[in-house]
Length: 198
Length: 102
Image 1 (cartoon, chains in turn blue, cyan):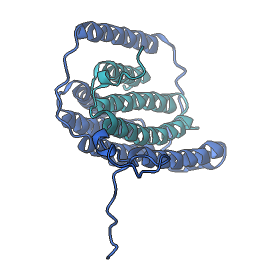
Image 2 (spheres, each protein chain N blue to C red):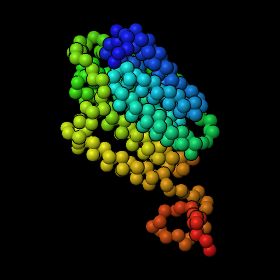
Image 3 (cartoon, chains in turn yellow, orange):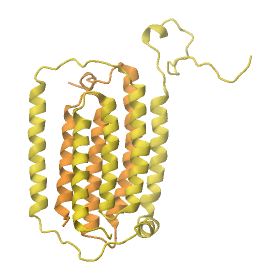
Image 4 (tube, helix red, strand yellow):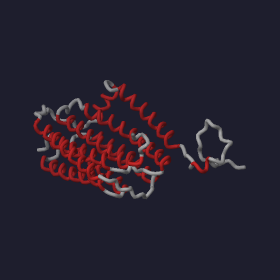
């Protein structure tokens, strides 16, 4: 990549500040809609960092899949479970938060010290300018089986999500009166058939 | 000069924020968002190693794409489970999902 080192360093600084700030916002904001939009900010700045790492294809895939699919899915889930509820405050909540913060800070110190101390075997060859063709070669030669299994897994998860989210249970009070229900069927709300004229 | 430990430290920070959010958040959807943060941190690690240690055979990027696919599937199934729990219990508070607690 023909970008000067200073520009790369400044870009990395801006992107990392954006990413960490947005991630803290995701965790700490009280309103979950703000959290969902800041999660999109995390994903976009992650795509920018991928471009700094000479990975054009993965950066585009990150934007397409994460911002375009996962973030929209999360927003839809927030809409579907849209219930303003004030959580009952737990007693001794500060013990959990404090101990979690201490553990996370310790883990961060451990990981960063390991990554600084370890003598990485940095390769000196120039990175590739375009990564699409090598990735495609990997997919269709030595990673062919995982690639196909991923498609099967996506199909399985799609069907599983439909089956899990489809059922529409009635409240218990409404079920009691209906004795004609077959014992094997799940109690579902009777549906209006759309598009059938009587 | 941009070096490998910068990216690793950034990924470590993002992972720790994800763990913190996973433990302390009480909304079930926010727990799923924290899991996405952790998966992104792992992806950043893989991409950093792929660029600095293995820049010719970019296998780290291939693994990153697999992780992205798995994360998309996980998000779909996880949100469907949250929706189903919400219909059964009428709440998204993690503290009230205590049916299996002893």
